[in-house]
Image 1: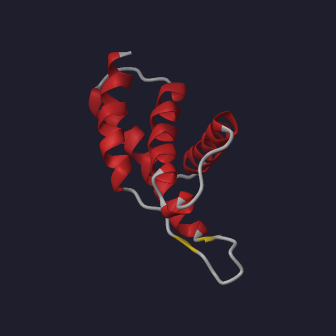
Image 2: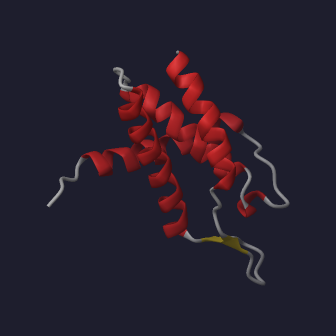
Length: 114
């Protein structure tokens, strides 16, 4: 668990630097720039992979997912997306973040270098 604690401490600092862009048109509904969200989550997954490699110990996929999802959740929770709003269902929010992060990890795992 020491590995995960160190990664989470690093990730929280980096997570605040990750921004997710949202705009509010006159209709009042947010239009989230999906590409930016995917980019931030992809960065979080890549950071978890790099940190696990540098740590030099066996790290489970569940540990990497927890680390990456924690960064993604912090980034979303502190983004403009939540301006004027609050998370009403924390469990549902976390499930969504975990699902998105896991999906990005699966996509990256399915690729190979040319």
